[in-house]
Length: 83
Image 1 (cartoon, rainbow, N blue to C red):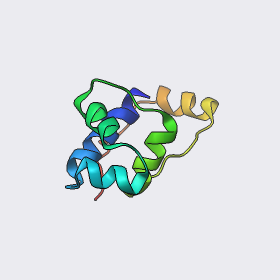
Image 2 (image 1 turned 90 degrees about the vertical axis):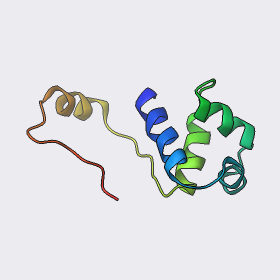
Image 3 (image 1 turned 180 degrees about the vertical axis):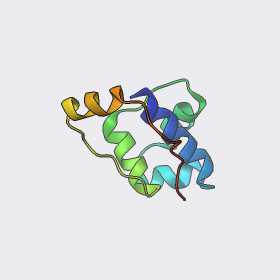
Image 4 (image 1 turned 45 degrees about the horizontal axis):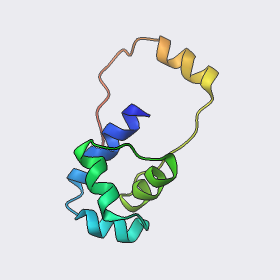
């Protein structure tokens, strides 16, 4: 979940929205987002999903066996984030 937290923290920072605005739309207390972004607390998967939805991000499940096969392979080219 650590990668998810890093991505979500950055998405919140990059969104240009206040923690209050994101919290209101996601039905999450702004203080929870304040502490999460500051790194003083984690976030539940349910809350991460709500916040991700507000930011236009999606969460998906993956098959652990498939993930192990893919993650064991070395990428041939650099993967970049699309806007």
